[in-house]
Length: 141
Image (cartoon, rainbow, N blue to C red; front, top):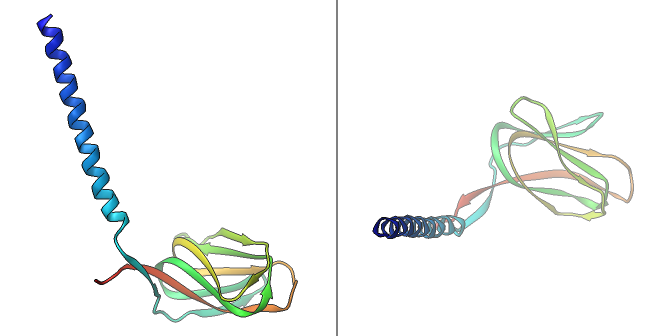
């Protein structure tokens, strides 16, 4: 009987320790999540190349992109956005079928040096003239 009681106490102590560790980890992760961050324009020259498959916007070095802002005129629809990966292959990212107005923001999380924008149909009067690429940095207090 004494052994059984001792075993139950050890098990309870293990569960209490585990519970306390989980509480500590949740506080640490919450603090990390709530660190103030802000979008900063990536300060690299963006070159534009028109191809049969769309317009390719490239930057000289790979960067982690968190937001793309499409700049243009008028209203457009039916655009597809693809990201070039580390193996230089195009990966589809987003297809925008609805009508959009400029400036138009797209949230993303990708490390790339090129973005391809393809226009599948000519509906409406407008066009994408340029893009801006943003990354996240910790906000200075």
